[in-house]
Length: 149
Ligand code: IDP
Ligand code: MG
Image (tube, rainbow, N blue to C red):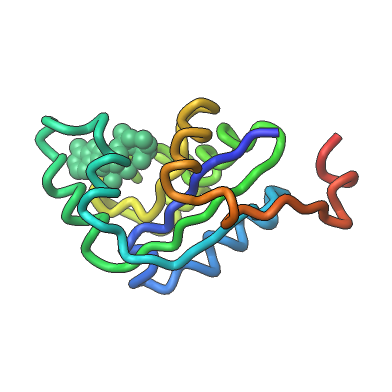
């Protein structure tokens, strides 16, 4: 079972796409483990995006993610990392697969609506960066055996 950090970024919140994105993840069969609506601090933004420090878009990226509230969530399931990246689509909306969130709702890489962890290890690290253990809920869904083999 993999866990992934999903952020609905400020543009997604402002555009009223919380329900749309959450609905797609639920429909996919992923199980919600934690969620909080929050303002991202400068410190958290800089740690989360440390890998991009020094790139031309870095300052704009930090400004974007701290500009307004985000919805931070943890979702889990078999192959959750790959499944959620696929549901969100490629980083550049014009390269995102038709039917993906970024294809269906975005135009520009700097306003691409969501974040999702890109590897199992980064999923573990990002979940622990954004959530305290007591904010995560371990639970079983009545439908789990019809979704998880
Ligand atoms: P990802 O979100 O699909 O994992 P990354 O390459 O990790 O994509 O980049 C993190 C975020 O930085 C992207 O989602 C996007 O918001 C922003 N970003 C990446 N490349 C560019 C760019 O060339 N211009 C502006 N923003 C960018
Ligand atoms: Mg990334």
